[in-house]
Length: 99
Image (cartoon, rainbow, N blue to C red; front, side):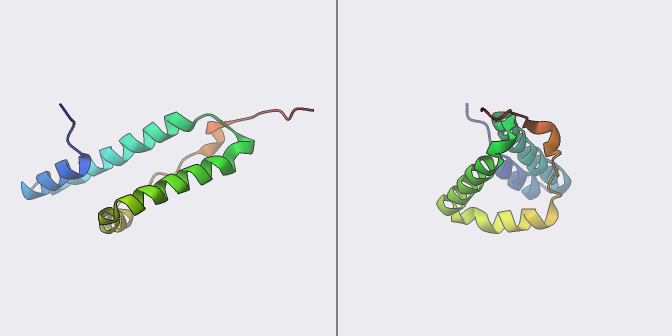
């Protein structure tokens, strides 16, 4: 059985008059995907930071382009949700240069 999307579940909860629960559902969804991404890319070599940023920006752009209907919701969420700030110092892998 497929899991219900966080956005669809939140919309359903809003229709049921459960706005606070809907907000928590969306926050949970954001945390779920954020944690999956962090787990997938960490630790990364400091020298590869630009590659990680480029890959994430490219992927995010592709998702937006393939799902333009998501842009209004994205803009709303950016206004009302506190986006987490990450401590990237603990997520970097220090590597030595080869001689």
